[in-house]
Every structure is written in C-alpha cells, then in structure tokens.
Image 1 (spheres, helix red, strand yellow):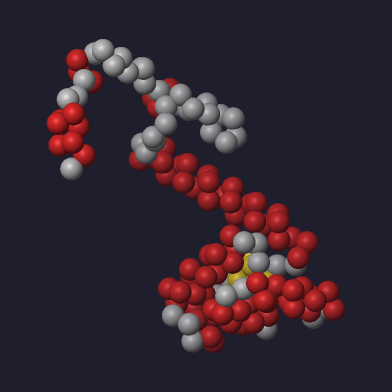
Image 2 (cartoon, one colour):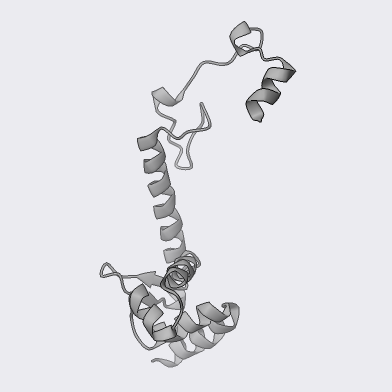
Amino acid sequence: MSKRSIEAYKDILPQLSDMEQKIYKCLYTGDYTAENISFYTGINLITVRARVSEMFDEGVIAQKDSGEYYILHADDMEDVKQQRLEAKYLKWKKLGEKHGWHFRYDCIDKHGEPSPEDYKRSKIDPEDDAFAFTKQQTLNFIS
C-alpha cells in the first residue's frame, strides 16, 4: 500500500460504523465478493450486502464486473458516488416506465426530458360530477 492509501484508510475508518469498519478492513486486504466478506468477517450475508450497498452509495467502495468489491482511491470517490446515484435513478425510471408507475403528470425528469405522451392526462375539472366526492365518500375511500 502506498503512503497515500494508508492516510486515506486512517481518515475514512473513524467515519464508518462498526460493521462498515470490519468490511473496510477486510477489503483493505484484498478484493472480495459479498459472500467472501461475510465468511471472513462473520457478518450475516444479508447485512454485508446492505452495508456494501451503503458504502457503494457513499463512494467508499466500488464493485468490479466480477462482483468483487474494492476500496476506492480518495480522488475517485465523488465520481463513483455520482455514477452510482445516476445508475440507480435510471434503473428506477426504466422500471417505472415498464410498469406504468408514475405519480406526476406534465412534469420533466431530472435530465430535462418531458414525460411520454401516455403519462399526460387532462386537467381535472372540480365542477365535473365524475370527480365530485362527498366528505363521507372520501373518508370511505381512505379507510
């Protein structure tokens, strides 16, 4: 390890929770899959997956195509953090479009792209009887 890597290790370690510290120390010795991290640290696999996901979100670690996690160099942390955030956004956007999950109409997404035409709907006229609910109907609907 370089002197700079050791300094980064000492700076990051106090900011992590106990479990994250165990995972970080494990990854300090090499690149490992979640299963191997679980084996070497004794932390439950589901917990390891949750913690590495959080650490990935924070830009502390990254993942290779092979599935192995590794510690990021301090200079790369912000880039990986932004890439991870963007990948999650695109994943959920694609999933939402596939299943028709949309809750806003006539809006523009974070990339400035307008909503597809089938997402749009006409404005609701409050005077229209089809949309008029009594207070009791509204309460019945909610409960």
